[in-house]
Image (cartoon, rainbow, N blue to C red; front, top):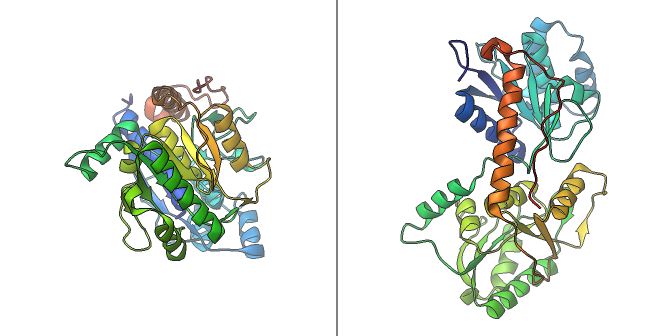
Length: 365
């Protein structure tokens, strides 16, 4: 615990973008568990666009510190500033970079960002948790995107979801939908369902299926019309009856597939199972240089991701060892805690050293 007679006070910034907020929440959980941190959420939904946003951003580094709350409320919806000064500010999403910079200047406190940032914005943060290696003294590589998901929590979720007993001999399919960079055609959803039917018949298992908010009722209708009901153990159709069960379904699946449009879903599968079978459409518009593509390539190179074209999920490969990803995550969390303690000497009574390189995190091979 901390050396002084108080707890670490952490502001967790909610950009209202679910995947990013989930990453912030995951770090908050680690800090609460390991350091007894007192975490407070602050909602900061970006309200400005275009040239007005650019003008506001130009003020972030020059506005007098006491005026930070006024500019923050002009740039973001729903901002309610806590009375107590934080010791650390944690955020993800580039939408919240200016928010963090404003209050770091006002309070003179360190900041932690989850995601890829480049200079000069990366230099605004004292610690940047990155999904791909970056040559920065303040960068720390995470084994996977931080989702807060663990094997133990998923097992507990499955036991609650199926109190009569977790179903055996099942594979799991987690289905997303269209996004900025991925587009699925109607015939691809049909091809996916046909491939699932063939796999279930050939290998003698049943499917656990969960769609998502992005899937849409029309695409769910195609899947339902094509899937053989005899091949389905249980399904969550978000368009008809949304229900939380993702972690339970991942735990119960002997193999777990996820569509390529969600890095969060893929990372959750890897955190729980050690490997994710990832289904991709014909149309995804991302260059190899993007953080998205580099992260997926890193996972594939490490044997944590097995790619499949959407109409052919048969390709087999050796599944990863869930214990290895747990070891890597635990070592990441230990390093994270030490770096946070070094950033907050007023709380922990240690010498701040924000320039040191993180220890090399082992990655599952």
